[in-house]
Image 1 (cartoon, protein in one colour):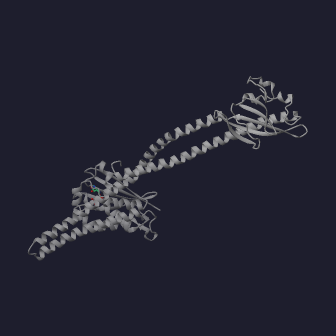
Image 2: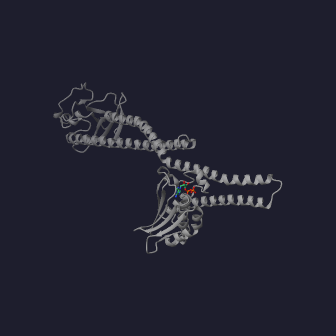
Image 3: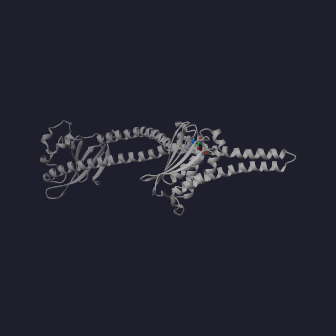
Amino acid sequence: MNQNKLFQLTRWRLASWYAGVMGLILSLCGLGVYEAITHAHWVTIDRELESVAGTLHDSIEPLLKQPGRLEPAAEKLLPDICLAGQECQNSPTNPARHTAGALHQGAYYVRLVDLSERLIALAGSQPTGLPATSTEKLWRTLKDAGGNRYRQISLPLHTQNNRDWGYLQVGRSLKDFDDYLAAIAWILFLGLPIAMIAVAGAGWWLAGLAMQPIYRSYQQIQQFTSDAAHELRTPLAAIRATVESVLRMTHLSDCEARDTLRVIERQNHRLSQLVQDLLLLSRMDRETQPPNPQSQILCCLNDLISDVAEELADLAIAAGVKLTTDIRTNKPVAVVGDEEQLYRLVLNLVVNAIQYTPAGGQVTVILERGNHHAMIHVQDTGIGIVPAEQTRIFDRFYRVNSDRSRHTGGSGLGLPIAQAIAQAHQGSIQVSSILNKGSSFTILLPFR
Ligand code: ADP
């Protein structure tokens, strides 16, 4: 297949399309997975922040008395608290001392701002260079001086007598989240080309696999065309040679004219027979639908075999072969089918048996009734066929011994036609043969 440019190009195209489409689908899937992971983590982080901020808010708020002033009791709740205007060191405190021990464990920070958004106190792990933000928005994503991202929530605080106190801002570093997303992005970024290479390889292999039957039938068509042309060329060349030789003659007697016409008639007959066979085969190839019910009648095989034997009696006598029939059933055997085609099927096998049996030999046509099939055996005591050829004789234009077969007038289409007819009737043909002893062809036709 790779030697044929058209097929190789098509295979490349198919593989490329396959890789392209699969690449697009994989990219979209990768993007979808990335988005889903991002979203799921984002939701988790927001929930976590909401819960930490909610706990702090509920613990601090009952202790607040005056707007903008942090009570000492509230200060104790926050780890590493640093009041505005004080010098603070980031010394780790025992988390167990604080209700908000979570602030120590995670990368959280807390900011307390008054109503005019002035910083009152800071707590937790303090990021450096984080800009002060307005309290208008509930959620914010910020960046510190080093480009690290933070997620922050702002909750309003009220005093015990329900006056506005200020705001509690709780934030968390997104470093672990960003690192995780970067790792996934790298996996997708590197994984996609590797997957694409694998997909392209698989596409190439699958395209080859899918094109094999097409290539085989393409080869068969090519072979068939060249065989058909070859077969048609022979009688045409004979007619041309005969006509040319007659045209070269200055005088043509009646007898010579008759001989010439006879040659032309014989070659013409051969041509017509060949064309008819080819048409029949191509019609049977096209017939994928069930056969026309009008042509399907109950055919009595007993009568059919007798008719074939009667028609070929002269041929058998001329060949010096004894042709007999053996009906091994009392009842008539009938199958549903096209009578004309079934006649042709048996005729082809019996003609072959006579032609490939030397004078003095015997051809027997046997009819038997099986449980599900009618069986017709065409047995001869002829030249036989070597085992290696027995599967090939059903190929179109195939002849075991071309010269000998051509001598019999055969074109190598008799058995393919017989097989096509048997298959069109859901039947089959089997062959068994011993070289120089004889052959037996068995037709199986199911009772439908
Ligand atoms: P052809 O028209 O040449 O007979 P067929 O398709 O009918 O073509 O047969 C194909 C080949 O099978 C023949 O060329 C012949 O060599 C072989 N063959 C068919 N029938 C017999 C037989 N009964 N005995 C021996 N050889 C046979």
